[in-house]
Image 1: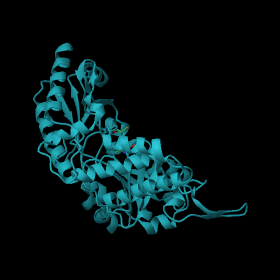
Image 2 (image 1 turned 90 degrees about the vertical axis):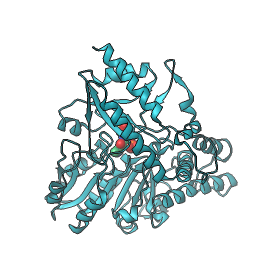
Image 3 (image 1 turned 180 degrees about the vertical axis):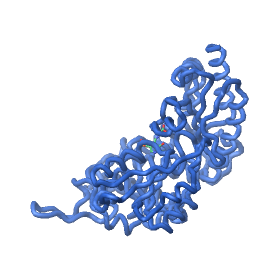
Image 4 (image 1 turned 135 degrees about the vertical axis):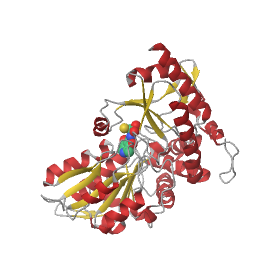
Length: 413
Ligand code: C6P
């Protein structure tokens, strides 16, 4: 549906028409896509922005004096401006374009933490984290002799706040915390957590991979120091991501990688690095992907992130009610404040078998450990089935999911 962006739409699910991938049948059934937490589908506006750059404007950025290079640079840098406004960063210098959340977190681990961490220092995370918010810290702890410590969660999948705050001692140099859990959907009370961390003098990185696609994010009002997210989960192309960081911190950090574009001057004796954010963007970037991401930001801004959250919250509540009504369902992750994601098990059916049976009925979900193995261990599970929502889902999708699960229950009865 290609309405002017400010025009309200009566039925949110009408946006589905904007997504060509959702118009197909899979295994003889209209596709129901409930795997947006892994990667969201792309609207026509994004596909067209990428295609148009590739058809007409393809050239390298920041290098050429010719027209195509100017056009490419304008669109690429235009996307940075859109991202800056989208998360209310105070300056475009704070928007570092990366390949995704994973690279953004590794950049902070290696460039912010590695030069300053020493034995006895600690990095604090929680049991909810995705591997991307665990392993980079493990690596930097091994490199520096610092220690990784982990705040517990309760059986609903919520961070135990008192225990988290007790761990916030002067030894902790950085807190790495997810905005929304990819496996359980728990939304962390970030303002409260960041407030406590700041009182304790701790730098905070938020893994926002599952936050930005589903709600309005204002990095200045959150009060964190770094916020990392991925383009492909917010309806943009894969291989794009953002590290937002406070300018003062980024300014003081050494480059993460060396190469073209991140320099002002090079001789064999020394190199003068480029200004922010280019100091962190070595080599030819993912130009078409970033241009597509700019179009995704326009698309989301047109709908309004508060509306997206409202729509998905109501759909999530419906999903929980409908799932709970199925005999033999166990919901994994029942946090009071939850969004967009629901993990579950059905009797003793292996999640992979469940995923396969659902796929045969045209319903796409993710199964397994969701790159959160410690979290699965916390629940004594090898994995779960996970349905995750995007702005294009509606109640019919949930009904198809529950119908397919009923069938699976009968097959395994
Ligand atoms: N989660 C999921 O199915 P990348 O791969 O860099 O775009 O994002 C990594 C990542 C980091 N943090 C969180 C909270 C995430 O959810 C993800 C990606 C996908 O849940 C793929 S494992």
